[in-house]
Length: 173
Length: 200
Image (cartoon, rainbow over all chains, first blue to last red):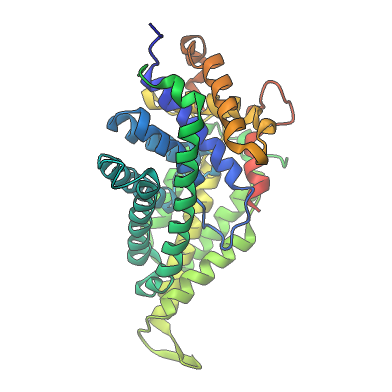
């Protein structure tokens, strides 16, 4: 019988992957400063398939804390925005993921999660930073989030289909 | 890499504590002039800490926050730019928010430094996350655009199974978050440098 994988260890590993993907993301040009593609959310999509809910929330906590430590924004509004968006997104993705995949694929899960996270961040930015006028940029913000989450979801689907690593973990958690 | 003068007088823990105290002081007084002065001071601290200041980002941030606040006019009209009335209330409120937001980012940048110990289980876990981050980061040269899935999968297989199943040996040294530690097999790889250089 194959050796069981420690869930905490896998969560930490996925957290490390989140930070790695954040680093990769900095290589892509950004149309507007502070706007991100969100490829660091890819491990959270993997986690939906691999880990139970509490570990997914732990992964989100590790991801945002790690990113906050590296970028130095752990003690700022940026961290709170990131936390609110990431936790909301993960909770929505987890809930939607429970719907059978014939109705909602992982791409749909990714898009809905991103939309939820972006909407929460928009509401916070309207409430605390930009004021009501920030709704003007909402369509652009949500459109970019939808396109990038579609691409991330698509990548996740293809990766999970081909990945020997994911395959090697199945049934061992 | 620029010299970090602050680390000569403050340990990471005291630096974090001092930063948090300054932040409370910053938030306690609402005067725009006070917050602008404190933000300038925080900027000075960031420079003392040897960190890069992303001038363009901060200026754009304050500009956009002020601009969006101006779109909801309130208070005395100072002047009109075409259809847009520049009102005193909206202008001051926008500047206040923009400067506060920027000040908080700057004090956060100053306060958080390698060697900061996060106590308890979370601290240990964060250490593990950074450990894996370093291990994966060492392998980044293996990523190929034409076979992103295959190469990433191969990196994950190698990294996870070479390191992931003997965590106890490494757990003790991972209590401290030291994310600037160079990767073992590539001395020139410093992940924090990578972030800072790419954030421009």
